[in-house]
Length: 130
Image (cartoon, rainbow, N blue to C red; front, side):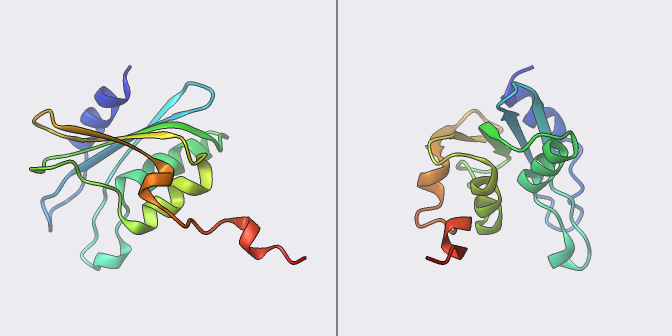
């Protein structure tokens, strides 16, 4: 299964009764296995979960911790980037050069990398003391 198919398929399962903005995400772990996630809203808006976070959670639940590739899809006029929190979550599990493809449901796509999405990333190295 391709990342695009996995993200497209899971997007249909998104629970988005408030925004009606369904998002699907798929990540390929370094093992080659694909994990998918969709956004899950809650009436208490801050309590929702983004598609990217769901895909990462599925990967970690399966015992993996490294991302090789990411794809996000939404029904939008232009490709939608991950929110700031999800950019940080992706950077936790992916090297800076990991490719990220942002897609729309009508076929537009934009290729980028984790580093381009989050310049100046906060890392564990920032917590090291000399």
